[in-house]
Length: 598
Image (tube, rainbow, N blue to C red):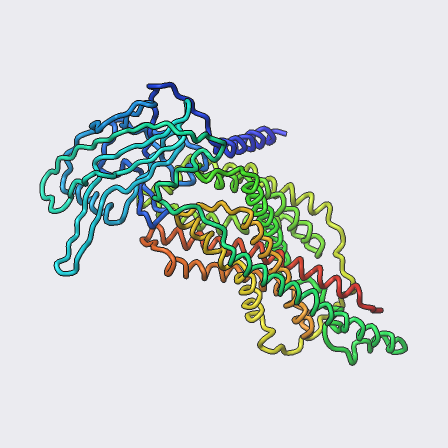
């Protein structure tokens, strides 16, 4: 009873953390101060490599005061701090001096390197992001070659209001001459100035549409549009695969069942010991097809964690379809993913323990420990490496110690207990394994298999076909996660997700049938690996995307990209392996139930 209050408190905290990502109402009166927060800077082509704005030699207050952030904002690398800009509601400002600095040659070189790497800055005013480049770089000519670098020392803020609310915010450097940073060998005096221009707009804020114009400045690419080619390609592939499984495979099965049952009736006068003589194909292995596989606990853990991520992915997409995420808010999906992961741990414990008990598993405690660490251990290892690289480079993507302790506490007090609770319920509700055929004590010898029925070939076919169904959509997802696009086509994403699961199930059934036809009854792990290998193709695509479709570079971005891409492929292996296994199990039970046997 003593463990219940912390659990409820943490659960309530995460619910509030998730809800806090919704847009907040801020009302102003004429002349009220409007706080502008400086947030972060970083290379334009490395979205996950960000640093605190005040790490650059820029105007900063003597005492830096940070804004309290939500969990999602911290995970997104935000580190907002109060700025020196004085902005008042509906009061214009014309070229006001922010501060005067004397830059040393070392500070000038720091700014030059940042500008050459296309550093951009991000400010936040009333939860609206403002972005712009730190400086200006120009390269022209071949002979002679010119290389000019300048620093933007004046910023123009444009804000639009309706009633007592700020509707739109933008920052620009139009008609502004940059301060040259070329050939600086002594102290460089710099005066930072800014202007503020207010204008009234008829646009009214309606929930999450409030910042809908924030992309009009074109700093980041516009929201992705519907890509019908991807949808049509996926639909055609799904219809072909489903048609193949339902029409062709079922006709073959019908002929097999008719032939096997006819042979059974003709051999009723024969001895039961000679039952298998003269048979071939999948019927002959009916006494071995339900022989339990090796590494049962690991198999059940894969199925449990895979079921958890299926529920997690479906929940995220459904929440997005319901409009619970705002693309202009920081870290909303991150908060939701952490919340749902903690709550769905009970699914992994239930599925794993339930199936483990069905197939005769006895080491229940070990099975629960394996289930709870099957994803969390690789994730923690990957995150530790990535976070250490960010920390060593001073990036804001490195999580603070308080956030790390909070997430660890949530896993220990919410995720792990729910896994154990789900495991207890699964173990107690488990019945006997539903096997239509008896299993002999002595395993049948498996005949030599041709090369095209090998595990590697099945993994190649079973992984490539589901990958090809989502390959076009995968580019847009990568461009959103590792680029600057904003993904809002959640209906299309849900449709493609359903297509992926359908293709994985269909191809698994077909490959399992071909395997059983070769009198090979080791289908348990083969069914997991066949469609689960899609995760390997996704990781290989990430390598292609990094080298051919992106401009990412540097150790910080590279380590994060490949670390989390490897985890992404692993998650898809768990999800599709689970779908593949249960589809094959359902199919095998169906064909052997309809087979007449003594």
